[in-house]
Structures are given as C-alpha cells and as structure tokens.
Image (cartoon, rainbow, N blue to C red):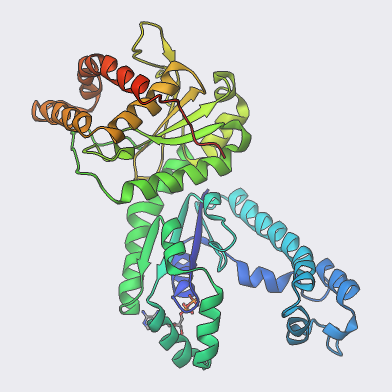
Amino acid sequence: MLRIGLTGGIGSGKSTVSRRLAELGAVVVDADLIAREVVEPGEPALDQIRERFGEGVFTADGALDRPALGRVVFGDPQALADLEGITHPAIWGRTAQRLSAAEEAGTAVAVHDMPLLVEKQMAGEYHLVLIVDTDEEERVRRIVSNRATPEAEARSRIAAQATDEQRRAVADVLLDNNGAPEALLAAVDRLWEERLTPFADNLATSTPVRAPQELTLLDPQPAWAGQAAREIARLRHRLGDLAVTVDHVGSTSVPMSAKPVIDLQVGVESLTVADSEAFRAAMDQGGWPRIEGIDQDSSKDGQPWPKRYHLGCDPAVPIHLHVREVGSPGWRWALLFRDWLRSDESARTDYRAEKHRLAAAGLQRGEYADAKEPWFDGAHERVEAWAQEAQWTPEGEGP
Ligand code: ADP
C-alpha cells in the first residue's frame, strides 16, 4: 500500500486536497478526527485524563470539557506533557490500526492527513509527502473570511506552526493553492493519474522504475539534493540499525551534468545483512525492490567489489540504490569519487566532456555504463593522488 503524508499550514487547503483524494479512491486517515475519537466517552484515554486532571476538566454529562482542559495545560509545560503522554500513544495506536486495516482490505493508496507532520518530523514514514502551499497572507484572508476567525487568532495559530520553508523542505510534491480551487483540484487529479496510481501499482508488484533507455544529460538541477535528502530520510526510517551509513553519491550528488537519477549508497555491516529477511522486507515495503543478478561493481583493483542493487518505484524520481559493506573498497570509492569531483573543477570538466562524448555517440543506457569504464580506469590514479594529498578519509553519513 502506498502511504502518503498530507499536510499544509492552517488555511492552506489541506482538507480540500484530502477530500479530493478520497473521491479518487484513497483511504484517508484524518489525524484531527482520530485525536477527537480517542477522548470520546468510553475511551481508555478519557479515564487516564480524569485520573491526572480531575473532574474539573469534564462537563456535567461526563464528556471532556476541551476549553477547560485547554486552560489547564496552557502555559504549563508539565501538564501539557502529561496530557500528550496520555493522548499521543492512543492516537498513534489508532492511526497504525486504521492504516493496517486499510492495507488488509487491499487499499492501493492511503493518505494520512496530518497537520503536525512537519513539526513531529514524520516525513520519513511515508512513501511520498504532499504539501499544500499557500501564501501566508492569502491563508489569513481565507481563514478570516470563511471561518469567522479573528485575524489576530489566525496569525497566532500560523506562527505556532512550522514555517513554509520547513514544509517545503520535506515536500515531494508541492501543491500550489494560491489560485482558484479548480486549479488545485486539477493538479490533484493529474498527480493521482500520473504519479500516485503508477507508484502504487509498482509498489504492489515490486516493479522497479528504470531510467529512460535514451541517454539524456541534464545540467545540475537544484531539486536533486532535496530528492536525495528525502529518500535518505525514508531509508533511515525503514532500515533503522540495518543501515550504518546512507549517502547521496554519483553525479547528481556533486552536482554536475548527469542523467536524472539519484544514486544512493547504503552502507551495511556485512552483505549478510543486505541479504537478510528483515532488510529485504524493509526494502520491498519502502518501495526499493532488489534487482537480482547485479551483485558487483567493476573494480578498480582487479578484485571483485561485491554489492547489492535496488531500484525505486516512484515513476517521477528514478532511484538507484547501491548496498555495500562499510569500509569496503567499493563503498570507499563511491564516496571518494564524489568528493574528488566536488573539490576539483577540472575533474568535473573532464568527466563532463567524457559523458557528453559518449552521449553524442548515441550510446544507450546499458552500454553507457560499460563505455565509461576506460575513463574511470584512467582517472583512478588521479583520484588516489588527490586523496593522498588532501588526506581524504571516507566519511559515510551515520544516523
Ligand atoms: P486547511 O484544511 O488546510 O486548514 P481548508 O481546506 O479548510 O484548509 O481551506 C481553508 C479555507 O479556504 C476553507 O474555507 C476553504 O473553503 C478555502 N479555500 C481552499 N482553497 C481555496 C482557494 N483556492 N481559493 C479560495 N478559497 C479556498
């Protein structure tokens, strides 16, 4: 099941998007609704609240008196922490339950409509994060005019949330809602058809997304770093301790002229880990199926450099995932080659020229990797000389 996180600042139009996704066939799990459900009469959380805060936060008919509870926890961090210690586990438990029930029922796409997704740093939990993006002044106008909320309150609620910049950083998809509602709905419909549906199909069938057959070299794209960072957060979340290091490598990490592919390197303690049930299940669920039969790099020292290879399932962002043993020559080389290119402009110029020469020769995807090898072999000494001079040591990103 494709798990989508949906958020946006208050008044951005998140509920509008969530309703449309439900109409299109997604199961929507609404965080606000669940937060209310867990304190309804008969819920265990309600008894715990009574125990901690007393009858004063209940109405005469035994329901939770939200305004009264709000006054008690307002400005009292300990009271707030106690309240959240009661409600949050209940909310997370129910959310997980709803999502697994949807999955068992054969749902293809589930959407977690979650106002605090960014504040709670949950982006890595989802296959994709959708952010509804609307200028602050426009949001204030809409909240004030459509919800009869005083402007000062609208502003203070906006100020209490994450900033637009923080939200944009975790957005796989930014849905602009500064225009007419129809434009937003049309964008959601397009997204559903062009990305969410094929992504869900690929995920359900472990079908990898391969880069296009013809070789296109793009100039460095500002989007690459963010795409890699978000994928790394997802890998970290899914793999936990199974991954010792996770790094953006390859030309898009430099960045320099490249095929639009995000290469990532997952460092494992040993390839036994990469072949374990737990690792493979996490990779399948995360949407990175194993590609069998590709289990070594062409080495720079005559020895086999073993690895495991996975591809992503998101049709919009081709991901190549190399799993290598931390400290192994292949793991080291990926980091070294990247750092060398980052540090040396003439290295980038030479490598770029070689790529364009091969692209102009009309090579296809598979041939290209092999054709690059002679150049790599030639560069090998130069790279190692640089490593020595710069006293370079490999540093993979840990958790
Ligand atoms: P959120 O759930 O993000 O707080 P809503 O979807 O409830 O936001 O939208 C906030 C308000 O703005 C609602 O009253 C909604 O009808 C209105 N709204 C949403 N999108 C637009 C738009 N593109 N133009 C004008 N008003 C809009």
